[in-house]
Image (cartoon, rainbow, N blue to C red; front, top):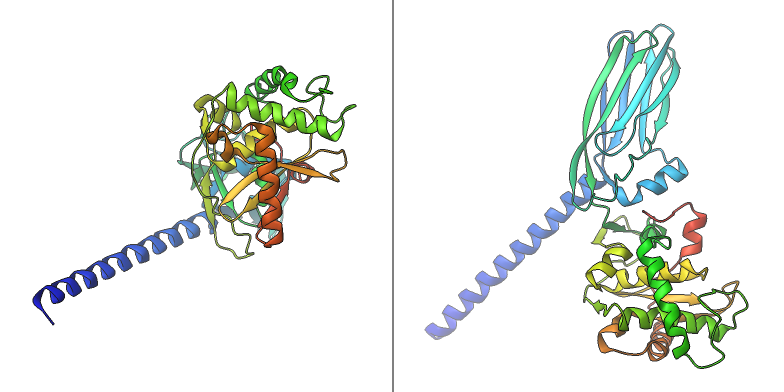
Length: 362
């Protein structure tokens, strides 16, 4: 083997080793991230005769917190007991994030449990667009104010942009669908100006299903789409949706901006444009769904009340200055192609999310 070939072989071997180490390091870092986001922490203590144990996650996906509140999800659990009967006042709060939640409980020698989900502070989510270190403050006193337990357990608050794509959380992407945001309302108002560009008979306005034919429902969605293209000059940003719906416990995360932020920045990736479109059609009373195919998301809308027939729109076409009616035809074809190939990963109906108490984040 010539000298040049030996040098080339050594170089390739070194690159393979380095890339392997880089990938392994990335996998390990990702694994550590998963563990820090999913594992529970426990803190026990207390002054005699009281014993307290706090069970809490090490990190919270803050975008999900409103749905936790709506369902009274047992995010935090306090085990308590007292060797002699005692009335305890237990207060729980998350620093700079929640209000204080207080419960008055009768402690006995038998260990009991109570769950807590303290309400949010006003505007707590609005500015939480970066990861923040916080703490779970737990205080236990008796009715006379004597302190038996005090602890501040560290907890990470993930950005409200951060979506955790798992089958368990699939419906929670509806938190990003914000139909009553003033920016979305303004979009729908402007879209009414594009109705006259549709073929007659033109809908009487952005009326949803009221006295509208299936074609007139399509016309309304077309008007919203064309408003994004012509009035807002929205640009599509390439980014893959990391959702496989394979039923495993693996975690895939993605930063997703809210519709108002997409409108302000005049750009968004596929899932952001889809949630924006979904917010606008929900604002006029239409039923929307988010279709997930490998690496991509696009919008489905029931064009007949009762969700018996759907049409589709794909935000990617705004970059190509494709008119809404043509974008509708292309997205219908995309949906049918993936249906035929059995590559539709998930279809997330916003109405089902609302029925599951997953409302708009803001």
